Image: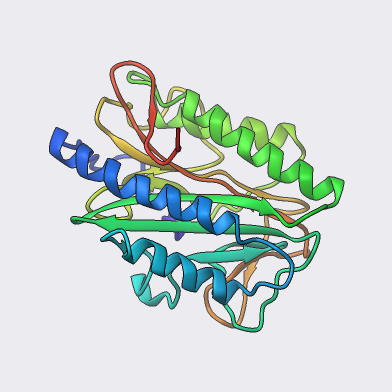
Length: 262
C-alpha cells in the first residue's frame, strides 16, 4: 500500500524475531479477514464510503486499528479504487459501485504495534472480458512473485517474475510505486519494484524477512495521473487497472503467505 518510492539497491533490511513474526501473523489475519469481508460487499449500489466504514469497524472490533487511517494524512480506513483507479482511491459517499465495475480494496491492520497489508481487485457481477483478464493476470503475477520468495534468491527475482507477467500479457505498470518490507512500520526496507530488475540482482532474500508483494497492472500505458483529491492514482488513458498484494514471511523452506486465509 501507498507505493513505497523506488530507492537505491543498498538498503537496510529488517530481520524479524520469532515474537515479531507471531504478532505479525495476528495483524495479517485481521487484515486478510477484513479484505475478504470487504470483497463480499462489492455489489451494485454500495458506495466506497460504506465499504470503508465497514472495514474500519471490522478491524476495530478485533482489537486492531486500520493501518492507513491518517498515514501521511490519508483520510480513509482503506484505499478503494474503481476501474481506471490503480491505488490510493479515497472513499467517497457519492461514489457508487455499478454492475461491471472492478474494485480494488487495499487494507492494512495494525495490532500490538505490527502491521499486515493486503489487497485484491474484485469484480462486481458480470464484467467485460478485458476486465476479467486483467484481474486474472494480475493475481497470477502475485503468486508467480511469491514463488520466488525463497531464501537465497534476490529481490530482483521477485521483481522479474512480476515483470514477466506484465510484459508477457501486454500490460504496463507505473515506475513510481513498489512493494516493500513490512513490520513495525507499514513501509520498511527493502524496496520490491515491479519492473526493471534483472533476476539475481538486489538484496538477497533471507529467512524471517517479511515482504509486501504487490503487482500493479495497467491496461494501455505506464503513464498515470493523480486526481484532484491528491491521492487517487489513475491510468492516464482511462484504461483498466488491477492490484493484488500479500504479506509474505520468508522461511528456510517455502514462503508463508501471512495474509492468505486457509
